[in-house]
Length: 265
Ligand SMILES: [Zn+2]
Image (cartoon, rainbow, N blue to C red; front, side, top):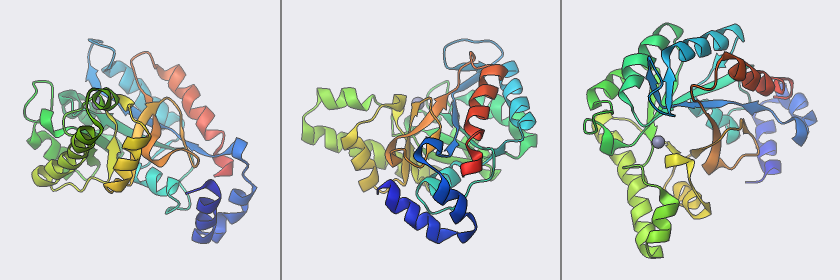
């Protein structure tokens, strides 16, 4: 779908904001930051770990900047033209890989906020790998109504590398099973209804994006350290990879830059 077509649909969706939207130029496109976390600990054990003190500082920044933490599905609906408007200062929170610290450290720290979080899970690790959550932990988070479980493929392969190592037909079968099995298992074990996908390592290509769309994923997420805009590829929406190096200062700058475009949204 082209930007022009999408705008047309969105304008039909809500007369209230037709004016500002019509005036928005491509250069001033509205943007929504989507943050992706992985692991939490008292100290930094690896590049994907965010210290508890750092995460505490992030929560403080989100409150002080009066952010509205929105469900990721709202960002997708907005990008798809199904939701005319997001609240001002919108940001979405995600966490990948179902690391145990998401249940044991992150969730307790978020409990009082009421903020929605999307967890991208690859089922082969759950109740299996020592670092991963159990199905019970995931179910408990889901039962709060604030955690939505989405697909991160079945066993987190590096898909472009697999494509190089396999014949075209074999790769098509492999990638399809990764995208379908993941969704099926999350449905069986949690009663979840995944509609979103996160590419392992943020890696994808045109063929994979077409496959995700064909298999019914409404949108897919990559990395890229950019905000989501209405112009981004639906099957490779960008997220900001959060590491411990992103302290309160860098996060504040990232959010303020995104919110500077709010008047156009
Ligand atoms: Zn991952």
